[in-house]
Length: 246
Image (cartoon, rainbow, N blue to C red):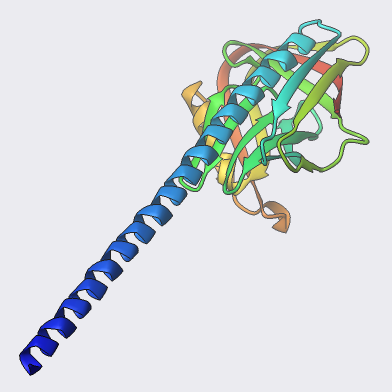
């Protein structure tokens, strides 16, 4: 009699253990599946944002080369669009420092930045320049300096699945200054430490000799200085462009 009861208890315990294992396995698979699905969705949103920012860069180049205005639609899909985090550009001994607002499409810890024609994708593993800034770096150097007006534009745009329109409008005519026989030209770029490496690789790939000064004047930003030699002519093109977000 006791043996039968023991057998019954064992069967119940076995059933409970098996059922517990099944429930735990389903829970693990379900949790991992949700996490994986969220990762895929986040990656897709960043990729879509990258495409939109690349279109924005193309439209920016159109405005610099004469188009009166261009508009770019960007779907946020729970991402955010930030306007700010200025990047400072300067041609040593030739121009004053110019602060240019950076436009950032952000999803959690990943972001796609647009500034001065360049597109940079940033992730926890580092930053890579996907599109080079406007201009030419060779014996006949062309540098575009754009005063990007962002007055009245909110610092952060986001929330929900919505589409915004970023409009670029040229103000007046561009002006050009030509420096003949400059021999060498030094480009200074001051920005955050997370993306300074992408800028350095860009300039070095074009033959520049670069150095980085960290935490310039306690601002938390780094300054990149890249010198190009053998420059026969330097053409500095100044633009005035207004940016709005609708």
